[in-house]
Amino acid sequence: MPPIRILIVDDSTVIRKVLCDGFAGDAALEVVGTAANGRIALAKIPQLHPDLITLDVEMPEMDGLETLAEIRKIYPKLPVIMFSTLTERGASTTLDALALGASDYLTKPSNTGSLDVTLRQLREQLIPKIKALCETQPSQRAAPIARAASLRPAIQRSAVDLSRIDVLAIGTSTGGPNALAELLPGIPASFPVPIVITQHMPPLFTRLLAGRLNSRSGLTIREGVAGEILRPGEAWIAPGDFHMTVERKGATVVLALDQNQPENYCRPAVDPMFRSVAKVFGASALAVVLTGMGCDGTNGAQHIKERGGQVLVQDQASSIVWGMPGQVVASGLADATYPLSSMAAEIGRRVAMKRNSPSVAPRPITAGTRKVVVPGRQ
Image (cartoon, rainbow, N blue to C red):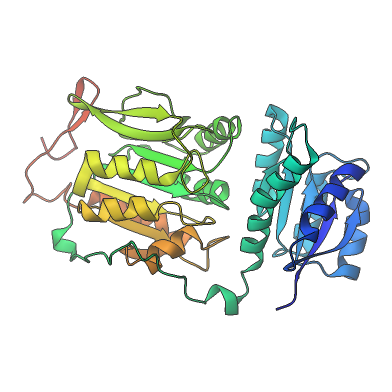
Protein backbone atom coordinates (compact mmCIF):
# COMPACT_ATOMS: atom_id res chain seq x y z
CA MET A 1 0.00 0.00 0.00
CA PRO A 2 1.49 3.41 -0.96
CA PRO A 3 2.30 5.83 1.86
CA ILE A 4 -0.11 8.61 2.85
CA ARG A 5 0.95 11.80 1.07
CA ILE A 6 0.98 14.81 3.43
CA LEU A 7 1.20 18.54 2.68
CA ILE A 8 2.28 20.63 5.70
CA VAL A 9 1.02 24.22 5.75
CA ASP A 10 2.48 26.41 8.51
CA ASP A 11 4.23 29.77 8.56
CA SER A 12 6.68 28.56 11.24
CA THR A 13 9.87 27.04 9.87
CA VAL A 14 10.37 25.29 13.21
CA ILE A 15 6.92 23.65 13.15
CA ARG A 16 7.37 22.53 9.54
CA LYS A 17 10.69 20.89 10.44
CA VAL A 18 9.29 19.30 13.61
CA LEU A 19 6.42 17.79 11.63
CA CYS A 20 8.72 16.52 8.89
CA ASP A 21 11.00 14.94 11.51
CA GLY A 22 8.03 13.45 13.33
CA PHE A 23 6.66 11.78 10.21
CA ALA A 24 10.07 10.60 8.96
CA GLY A 25 10.15 7.50 11.14
CA ASP A 26 6.85 6.10 9.86
CA ALA A 27 6.99 4.28 6.53
CA ALA A 28 3.22 4.72 6.11
CA LEU A 29 3.62 8.51 5.82
CA GLU A 30 5.35 10.70 3.25
CA VAL A 31 5.68 14.49 3.39
CA VAL A 32 5.31 15.52 -0.25
CA GLY A 33 5.58 19.26 0.36
CA THR A 34 5.38 22.21 2.70
CA ALA A 35 3.92 25.71 2.39
CA ALA A 36 4.37 28.85 4.48
CA ASN A 37 0.86 30.17 3.89
CA GLY A 38 -2.48 29.27 2.39
CA ARG A 39 -1.91 30.90 -0.96
CA ILE A 40 1.19 28.80 -1.60
CA ALA A 41 -0.63 25.69 -0.36
CA LEU A 42 -3.53 26.17 -2.79
CA ALA A 43 -1.05 26.39 -5.66
CA LYS A 44 0.72 23.21 -4.56
CA ILE A 45 -2.31 20.96 -4.04
CA PRO A 46 -2.95 20.23 -7.75
CA GLN A 47 0.78 19.61 -8.28
CA LEU A 48 1.38 17.33 -5.28
CA HIS A 49 -1.99 15.53 -4.98
CA PRO A 50 -1.76 15.13 -1.18
CA ASP A 51 -3.94 12.63 0.67
CA LEU A 52 -4.10 14.92 3.70
CA ILE A 53 -3.19 18.47 4.72
CA THR A 54 -2.09 19.78 8.11
CA LEU A 55 -3.12 23.42 8.22
CA ASP A 56 -2.06 26.11 10.67
CA VAL A 57 -4.75 28.55 11.79
CA GLU A 58 -2.72 31.75 12.01
CA MET A 59 -0.65 32.58 8.90
CA PRO A 60 0.16 35.71 6.87
CA GLU A 61 -1.41 36.55 3.47
CA MET A 62 -4.06 33.82 3.72
CA ASP A 63 -4.87 32.33 7.12
CA GLY A 64 -6.09 28.86 7.92
CA LEU A 65 -9.82 29.60 7.81
CA GLU A 66 -9.59 31.36 4.44
CA THR A 67 -7.46 28.54 3.08
CA LEU A 68 -9.83 25.88 4.38
CA ALA A 69 -12.82 27.60 2.78
CA GLU A 70 -11.05 27.59 -0.58
CA ILE A 71 -9.95 23.96 -0.19
CA ARG A 72 -13.51 22.88 0.51
CA LYS A 73 -14.77 24.58 -2.66
CA ILE A 74 -12.44 22.52 -4.83
CA TYR A 75 -11.62 19.45 -2.72
CA PRO A 76 -14.67 18.73 -0.51
CA LYS A 77 -13.41 15.33 0.66
CA LEU A 78 -9.70 16.05 1.17
CA PRO A 79 -8.89 15.44 4.87
CA VAL A 80 -7.62 18.56 6.65
CA ILE A 81 -6.28 18.63 10.20
CA MET A 82 -6.11 22.10 11.75
CA PHE A 83 -3.27 23.15 14.04
CA SER A 84 -4.36 25.56 16.76
CA THR A 85 -3.21 26.92 20.11
CA LEU A 86 -4.68 25.92 23.46
CA THR A 87 -6.12 29.39 24.06
CA GLU A 88 -9.61 30.92 24.06
CA ARG A 89 -8.96 32.43 20.64
CA GLY A 90 -7.43 29.19 19.34
CA ALA A 91 -10.38 27.14 20.59
CA SER A 92 -12.92 29.51 19.03
CA THR A 93 -11.10 29.52 15.71
CA THR A 94 -10.82 25.73 15.76
CA LEU A 95 -14.59 25.40 16.18
CA ASP A 96 -15.00 27.81 13.25
CA ALA A 97 -12.70 25.57 11.21
CA LEU A 98 -14.63 22.43 12.09
CA ALA A 99 -17.85 24.18 11.07
CA LEU A 100 -16.20 25.05 7.74
CA GLY A 101 -15.40 21.40 7.12
CA ALA A 102 -12.06 20.66 8.80
CA SER A 103 -11.77 16.92 9.43
CA ASP A 104 -10.05 17.19 12.81
CA TYR A 105 -7.70 19.40 14.81
CA LEU A 106 -4.66 19.23 17.06
CA THR A 107 -3.46 21.76 19.60
CA LYS A 108 0.20 22.65 19.24
CA PRO A 109 2.47 21.33 22.01
CA SER A 110 3.63 24.18 24.22
CA ASN A 111 6.18 24.58 26.99
CA THR A 112 7.43 21.00 26.69
CA GLY A 113 11.00 22.18 27.18
CA SER A 114 12.27 19.35 24.99
CA LEU A 115 12.24 18.66 21.28
CA ASP A 116 12.07 14.93 22.01
CA VAL A 117 8.94 15.43 24.12
CA THR A 118 7.36 17.56 21.40
CA LEU A 119 8.11 14.94 18.75
CA ARG A 120 6.70 12.19 20.94
CA GLN A 121 3.48 14.13 21.55
CA LEU A 122 3.06 14.78 17.86
CA ARG A 123 3.66 11.14 16.98
CA GLU A 124 1.25 9.90 19.64
CA GLN A 125 -1.53 12.36 18.88
CA LEU A 126 -1.24 13.35 15.23
CA ILE A 127 -0.17 10.20 13.38
CA PRO A 128 -3.17 8.12 14.56
CA LYS A 129 -5.49 10.91 13.40
CA ILE A 130 -3.84 10.98 9.97
CA LYS A 131 -4.09 7.22 9.52
CA ALA A 132 -7.70 7.11 10.69
CA LEU A 133 -8.78 9.91 8.36
CA CYS A 134 -7.01 8.40 5.37
CA GLU A 135 -8.52 4.96 5.81
CA THR A 136 -11.82 6.15 4.33
CA GLN A 137 -11.70 4.67 0.84
CA PRO A 138 -14.62 2.28 0.28
CA SER A 139 -12.36 -0.77 0.04
CA GLN A 140 -10.79 0.04 3.39
CA ARG A 141 -13.90 1.35 5.16
CA ALA A 142 -15.72 -1.85 4.36
CA ALA A 143 -13.01 -4.00 5.92
CA PRO A 144 -14.12 -5.86 9.05
CA ILE A 145 -13.04 -4.43 12.40
CA ALA A 146 -11.23 -6.75 14.75
CA ARG A 147 -13.55 -7.92 17.46
CA ALA A 148 -12.41 -7.34 21.03
CA ALA A 149 -11.94 -10.76 22.61
CA SER A 150 -13.16 -9.62 26.05
CA LEU A 151 -16.58 -8.58 24.77
CA ARG A 152 -19.56 -10.87 24.52
CA PRO A 153 -22.31 -10.63 21.89
CA ALA A 154 -25.26 -8.56 23.00
CA ILE A 155 -28.62 -10.18 23.53
CA GLN A 156 -30.98 -8.63 21.01
CA ARG A 157 -34.47 -7.91 22.31
CA SER A 158 -37.73 -7.35 20.50
CA ALA A 159 -39.41 -3.95 20.56
CA VAL A 160 -42.06 -5.11 23.05
CA ASP A 161 -39.36 -5.81 25.62
CA LEU A 162 -37.84 -2.33 25.52
CA SER A 163 -38.07 -0.33 28.74
CA ARG A 164 -39.10 3.28 28.95
CA ILE A 165 -36.10 5.56 28.37
CA ASP A 166 -35.19 8.05 31.10
CA VAL A 167 -31.77 9.29 29.92
CA LEU A 168 -29.89 9.82 26.66
CA ALA A 169 -26.09 9.40 26.73
CA ILE A 170 -24.02 10.38 23.68
CA GLY A 171 -20.35 9.61 23.03
CA THR A 172 -18.28 10.95 20.13
CA SER A 173 -14.81 12.07 19.04
CA THR A 174 -13.45 12.89 15.55
CA GLY A 175 -16.20 14.64 13.59
CA GLY A 176 -18.27 14.95 16.76
CA PRO A 177 -18.73 18.75 16.94
CA ASN A 178 -20.38 18.83 13.51
CA ALA A 179 -22.34 15.66 14.23
CA LEU A 180 -23.67 17.19 17.46
CA ALA A 181 -24.44 20.44 15.61
CA GLU A 182 -26.67 18.44 13.27
CA LEU A 183 -28.17 16.06 15.83
CA LEU A 184 -29.05 18.28 18.80
CA PRO A 185 -31.12 20.92 16.94
CA GLY A 186 -33.31 18.03 15.82
CA ILE A 187 -34.23 17.28 19.44
CA PRO A 188 -37.02 19.58 20.74
CA ALA A 189 -36.87 21.72 23.88
CA SER A 190 -39.73 19.59 25.24
CA PHE A 191 -37.52 16.48 25.19
CA PRO A 192 -38.71 14.53 28.26
CA VAL A 193 -35.34 13.17 29.44
CA PRO A 194 -31.91 14.64 30.28
CA ILE A 195 -28.91 14.27 27.96
CA VAL A 196 -25.27 13.70 28.90
CA ILE A 197 -22.54 14.01 26.27
CA THR A 198 -18.84 13.17 26.14
CA GLN A 199 -16.92 14.70 23.24
CA HIS A 200 -13.15 14.20 23.20
CA MET A 201 -11.90 17.79 23.60
CA PRO A 202 -9.49 19.73 25.82
CA PRO A 203 -10.43 22.47 28.31
CA LEU A 204 -11.80 25.73 26.83
CA PHE A 205 -12.93 23.85 23.75
CA THR A 206 -15.74 22.03 25.56
CA ARG A 207 -17.09 25.23 27.14
CA LEU A 208 -17.12 27.04 23.80
CA LEU A 209 -18.64 24.03 22.07
CA ALA A 210 -21.45 23.90 24.64
CA GLY A 211 -22.13 27.59 24.12
CA ARG A 212 -22.29 27.26 20.35
CA LEU A 213 -24.55 24.24 20.47
CA ASN A 214 -26.81 25.95 23.01
CA SER A 215 -27.26 28.96 20.73
CA ARG A 216 -28.41 26.74 17.86
CA SER A 217 -30.68 24.33 19.71
CA GLY A 218 -33.99 24.42 21.55
CA LEU A 219 -32.37 22.41 24.33
CA THR A 220 -30.43 23.99 27.17
CA ILE A 221 -26.85 22.84 26.59
CA ARG A 222 -24.04 23.55 29.04
CA GLU A 223 -20.63 22.32 30.10
CA GLY A 224 -20.90 19.82 32.95
CA VAL A 225 -20.70 21.04 36.55
CA ALA A 226 -20.33 18.69 39.52
CA GLY A 227 -23.52 18.37 41.55
CA GLU A 228 -25.88 19.68 38.86
CA ILE A 229 -29.21 17.85 38.78
CA LEU A 230 -30.20 16.10 35.55
CA ARG A 231 -33.47 17.53 34.21
CA PRO A 232 -35.53 16.86 31.06
CA GLY A 233 -34.68 19.09 28.11
CA GLU A 234 -31.17 19.84 29.38
CA ALA A 235 -27.90 18.55 27.93
CA TRP A 236 -24.51 18.50 29.63
CA ILE A 237 -21.14 18.19 27.88
CA ALA A 238 -18.19 16.71 29.78
CA PRO A 239 -15.60 19.43 30.48
CA GLY A 240 -12.12 19.01 29.02
CA ASP A 241 -9.68 17.06 31.20
CA PHE A 242 -12.49 15.64 33.40
CA HIS A 243 -14.43 12.40 33.18
CA MET A 244 -18.13 13.15 33.62
CA THR A 245 -20.38 10.56 35.26
CA VAL A 246 -23.80 10.43 36.87
CA GLU A 247 -24.74 9.30 40.36
CA ARG A 248 -27.93 9.02 42.36
CA LYS A 249 -28.44 11.33 45.34
CA GLY A 250 -31.64 10.34 47.05
CA ALA A 251 -34.52 10.95 44.64
CA THR A 252 -32.39 12.84 42.11
CA VAL A 253 -29.55 12.08 39.70
CA VAL A 254 -26.62 14.50 39.57
CA LEU A 255 -23.43 14.98 37.60
CA ALA A 256 -20.03 14.03 39.01
CA LEU A 257 -16.60 15.00 37.70
CA ASP A 258 -13.23 13.39 38.34
CA GLN A 259 -9.69 13.39 37.05
CA ASN A 260 -9.09 9.67 37.29
CA GLN A 261 -6.64 8.13 34.83
CA PRO A 262 -7.46 8.64 31.13
CA GLU A 263 -9.29 5.75 29.50
CA ASN A 264 -8.59 4.89 25.88
CA TYR A 265 -5.98 7.68 26.10
CA CYS A 266 -8.81 10.17 26.69
CA ARG A 267 -10.08 12.39 29.48
CA PRO A 268 -12.98 12.95 29.22
CA ALA A 269 -13.76 9.43 28.01
CA VAL A 270 -17.06 7.93 26.96
CA ASP A 271 -16.67 4.60 28.80
CA PRO A 272 -16.82 6.00 32.38
CA MET A 273 -19.94 8.02 31.50
CA PHE A 274 -21.67 5.05 29.87
CA ARG A 275 -20.81 2.78 32.81
CA SER A 276 -22.28 5.22 35.31
CA VAL A 277 -25.40 5.65 33.20
CA ALA A 278 -25.81 1.86 33.11
CA LYS A 279 -25.43 1.66 36.89
CA VAL A 280 -27.91 4.45 37.66
CA PHE A 281 -30.52 4.03 34.92
CA GLY A 282 -30.20 0.35 33.96
CA ALA A 283 -32.70 -0.68 31.28
CA SER A 284 -33.98 2.91 31.05
CA ALA A 285 -30.76 4.12 29.37
CA LEU A 286 -30.35 4.93 25.68
CA ALA A 287 -26.74 5.30 24.50
CA VAL A 288 -25.71 6.73 21.13
CA VAL A 289 -22.20 6.39 19.70
CA LEU A 290 -21.37 8.88 16.97
CA THR A 291 -18.39 9.31 14.65
CA GLY A 292 -14.99 8.99 16.30
CA MET A 293 -11.55 7.43 16.20
CA GLY A 294 -10.61 4.47 18.39
CA CYS A 295 -12.76 2.23 20.56
CA ASP A 296 -13.91 4.49 23.41
CA GLY A 297 -17.53 3.70 24.27
CA THR A 298 -17.43 -0.02 23.52
CA ASN A 299 -16.79 -1.12 27.09
CA GLY A 300 -19.43 1.27 28.37
CA ALA A 301 -21.89 0.08 25.73
CA GLN A 302 -21.44 -3.46 27.00
CA HIS A 303 -22.38 -2.34 30.52
CA ILE A 304 -25.50 -0.62 29.18
CA LYS A 305 -26.53 -3.72 27.24
CA GLU A 306 -25.91 -5.99 30.24
CA ARG A 307 -28.29 -3.82 32.30
CA GLY A 308 -30.96 -3.99 29.58
CA GLY A 309 -30.41 -0.57 27.97
CA GLN A 310 -30.36 0.31 24.28
CA VAL A 311 -27.38 1.28 22.09
CA LEU A 312 -27.60 3.06 18.73
CA VAL A 313 -24.65 3.95 16.50
CA GLN A 314 -24.05 6.30 13.59
CA ASP A 315 -23.62 4.48 10.30
CA GLN A 316 -20.37 4.18 8.40
CA ALA A 317 -21.34 6.32 5.42
CA SER A 318 -22.15 9.42 7.48
CA SER A 319 -19.24 9.10 9.93
CA ILE A 320 -15.98 11.03 9.47
CA VAL A 321 -14.23 8.08 11.13
CA TRP A 322 -16.09 4.83 11.82
CA GLY A 323 -13.81 3.76 14.65
CA MET A 324 -15.92 4.17 17.79
CA PRO A 325 -19.28 3.26 16.23
CA GLY A 326 -17.69 0.52 14.13
CA GLN A 327 -16.18 -1.16 17.19
CA VAL A 328 -19.56 -1.20 18.91
CA VAL A 329 -21.10 -2.84 15.84
CA ALA A 330 -18.23 -5.34 15.48
CA SER A 331 -18.62 -6.30 19.13
CA GLY A 332 -22.30 -7.14 18.67
CA LEU A 333 -23.47 -4.39 21.02
CA ALA A 334 -25.49 -2.17 18.67
CA ASP A 335 -29.27 -2.45 18.62
CA ALA A 336 -29.35 -0.53 15.34
CA THR A 337 -27.29 1.70 13.03
CA TYR A 338 -28.65 4.93 11.52
CA PRO A 339 -27.33 7.72 9.31
CA LEU A 340 -26.78 10.95 11.21
CA SER A 341 -29.65 12.60 9.33
CA SER A 342 -32.10 10.05 10.81
CA MET A 343 -30.68 9.78 14.32
CA ALA A 344 -32.68 12.57 16.01
CA ALA A 345 -35.97 11.19 14.70
CA GLU A 346 -35.09 7.67 15.85
CA ILE A 347 -34.06 8.92 19.29
CA GLY A 348 -37.36 10.79 19.55
CA ARG A 349 -39.32 7.71 18.51
CA ARG A 350 -37.65 5.47 21.08
CA VAL A 351 -37.95 8.01 23.89
CA ALA A 352 -41.66 8.47 23.11
CA MET A 353 -42.31 4.73 23.40
CA LYS A 354 -44.26 3.77 26.54
CA ARG A 355 -44.87 7.44 27.37
CA ASN A 356 -48.22 7.95 25.67
CA SER A 357 -49.57 4.40 25.76
CA PRO A 358 -52.67 4.12 28.01
CA SER A 359 -51.63 0.57 28.92
CA VAL A 360 -48.55 1.80 30.77
CA ALA A 361 -48.88 3.11 34.31
CA PRO A 362 -47.82 6.75 34.91
CA ARG A 363 -44.23 7.20 35.99
CA PRO A 364 -43.23 10.81 36.81
CA ILE A 365 -39.69 12.00 36.17
CA THR A 366 -37.97 13.25 39.29
CA ALA A 367 -36.21 16.54 38.56
CA GLY A 368 -34.66 18.15 41.60
CA THR A 369 -37.31 18.55 44.27
CA ARG A 370 -40.13 18.84 41.70
CA LYS A 371 -42.14 16.11 40.13
CA VAL A 372 -42.52 16.57 36.41
CA VAL A 373 -45.42 14.51 35.16
CA VAL A 374 -45.42 13.55 31.49
CA PRO A 375 -48.43 15.17 29.72
CA GLY A 376 -51.31 12.81 29.25
CA ARG A 377 -50.17 10.58 32.10
CA GLN A 378 -51.59 12.37 35.17
